[in-house]
Image 1 (cartoon, rainbow, N blue to C red):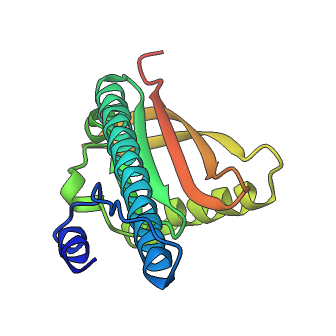
Image 2: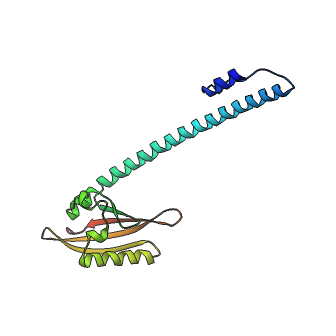
Length: 179
């Protein structure tokens, strides 16, 4: 029993005692063997869970990379904000369309980035999204970027999880200037 305890402590969970007896020692041996079986089963389940978790993490990372590639290559400008109004992402098309650098806007509140009529318009969009049943707002924008007038159609969609909780929003910008 002492040797078995030492082996189990070293990690050998396949060890079992073969002593059979009807007295207290036999009961102790039976309990010891049951304990090692339970530990072995627990370890196997833990290893299986760890393997599944690793596979799921790989799949999630592959999906994330895929979405980044899609957003990087789509012609529409895409900007996302988290639930508190902080800019989370901006794709290359939005950077080019609005003449922005990610370092200037990522992790900053839209309230600090916008001013004047644009801030007022953003607040109105937020209110519309909060009261809208379809969680989407679409509106045209006329901007002057580098002294050039631009016509942009802005689509704003609320992002909600399966339980309906606000996760933020996605803003999709289509440059209609050429049209």
